[in-house]
Length: 178
Figure (cartoon, rainbow, N blue to C red):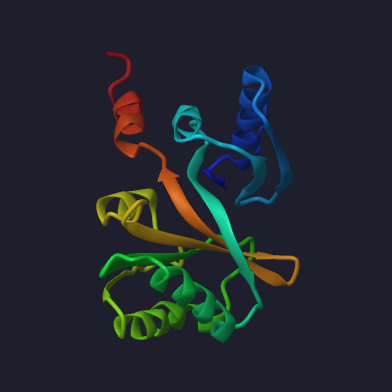
């Protein structure tokens, strides 16, 4: 889970919902940016959470280098049978991203371009917003947003499964008190 603006509240909310609903999952690690949850988290459950902005499934781990990350992301993208690939990459680490990170997407695009038509979605920030992910069709089944998180000296790579319903939350926020 990628946590929102108030991470402590988001983690408390997640823990409360897990306990309330008796879900077969538990929080195994928390940072100021993300929470690692072991077990099944459904899209329906995620949409009830107000404090989390993205949820993803871990797909791999790589060394903390550009070459290792490019290789893993390329492998994930070419393993799909679709001749068209749309993807984006987001850094959601506690610390600043390494200098080499901003060039990873273009390297992946060059590698995948040999086998498929590729569209790489970028942003000024190292992390794509929920709006960018949703509006650029980077969610499954066809699209890919890879979330990169530094973890214990390596990079944890996840594929985004869902993003916060920003339009519904916006209506709730700005439609009050009507």
